[in-house]
Amino acid sequence: MPDVFISYSTEDSKFARWVHEKLVQGGVSVFLAEISLVEGQVWDETILANLRAADYFLFLASRRACESQFVNQEIGAAISQNKRIIPVVWDMPPSALPGFLKKVQACDMRTKDPRTLMEVLGRVTTSIKKHKIISVIILGIIIGALIWVFRKKK
Image 1 (cartoon, rainbow, N blue to C red):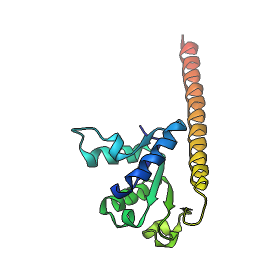
Image 2: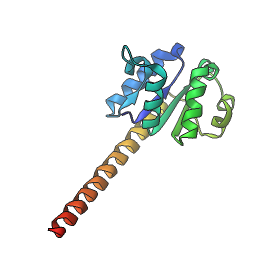
Image 3: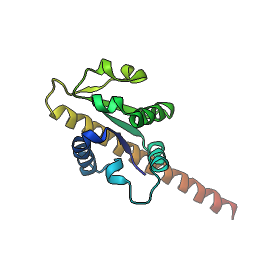
């Protein structure tokens, strides 16, 4: 299942693919509908399952994306599931983000060097990797404790 769910307008798919590629290069599992969906899958079920599974919700927030009914449904699902939401804006101010997202710190690319987004993606990648390592350590501790308990019962 994905670490990051990318929400975007299909009109911004070139940028979305670039972001997907950079995250995957960083070792992160990413859901991007136009790459991740395969023939025969039911879109809404697959999209919602991957959104539920992801820790991060990366919203590529163009004007077109903010007008999309599907993107707004994804935003609502991400908010209701307490996802770590990162809006990225480039053709509008963060104050134009829809609804509750106006209160979320956005990565504002309007006046910044493109490397700023690379830094944000790098921080997301690092955070995900840390969480994965902690999860593996916790799993190892649980398995060790179970082995100890079962050996003690014998």
